[in-house]
Image (tube, rainbow, N blue to C red; front, top):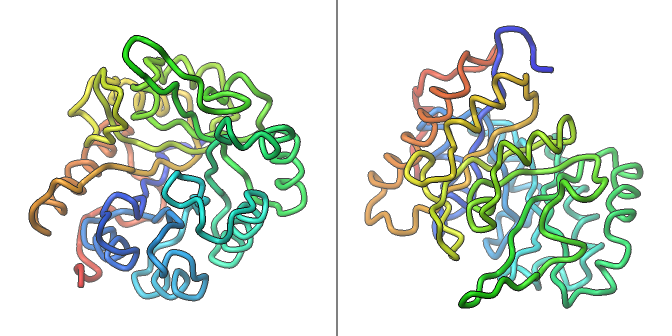
Length: 280
């Protein structure tokens, strides 16, 4: 349970400022007033370097709340091609920068050897590393009227005995899954949230929360009412923003939405929006 009078910490995923860099993400987070940063390990070289991430965290006085392992389609060759090796390196980075969580997607169907013992392998990694591997909900791929199951052992983490999980609202939207119901099924196993939004679309939209139809406000109020004590991280798509000012406005709107619907401030964290430094 969360501490009395506190709300979950609100962080920013570095993917939210793509195609700008990890360094820009930390600067935006500090300028807008986020309380932590989730680092998406990707094609940006800085995101792959422990020392660089540590320096950014220290420079902006922003803790790293999580490391997102490089398990997207376009990061298949980041840190090599062996999936368990990627997860081990993600745990090493998490420990080095003070993060308690690694976010990971379930294997693609074609990664059959990796998928074969994924559930037990994640549990073994958690025990050996001391890091929580929060397995994220994904979605069936829509092709015309057909739904293609593209993940093993499945896209819904509530159907497997993972100790730690992530709910992503854009992914829930594609799957036409009620995120509150998923959270209820997961109970205390819900460790991490990617706050965003979506519509009834086959595309992974990652909208500013409140601009879609996923029920983001109701979901946050559910978290608040149940004493959710994990991390809430904004993971939005700002690629259509034409200027730095537009991108910052979307990031600010997202933070204000989270604060409005989660409620009270966390103990000991600044949320006044004052800048610690702007994007460079």
